[in-house]
Image (spheres, rainbow, N blue to C red):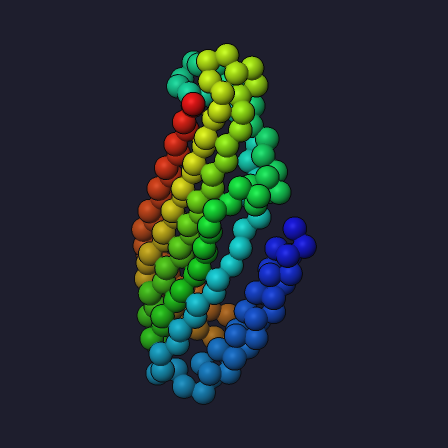
Length: 156
């Protein structure tokens, strides 16, 4: 958990430095291209109930961030933006792959359970800066989001 907080703090400090640098550049010349790439992290947990199908018995789920982090295979999150004058194109990409296995409680029908989960979230869009003053700006956005969740559970 400490490592995640340190990474988040470093990202915040780096982003603030880039924002100050970008502000200086935009005041010098408004005709240039600007680019922004910002990797980031999430700390997530999961709590609720699930069922195999509607009206089936439910099972309670309570998974902490620590549990998710221990079973994390790979994750990547990045926001990128290219801006020219008042126009911009942007994308926000999130990918996670988590897998876990465990013994079944009683071992009557199955001895082992394996679960794999992959999530991809992609946001793609464009913007137009309608208001641009020294102290504030207003961007009008249009875009699309793709969200794919693939979960596989195997009982052995």
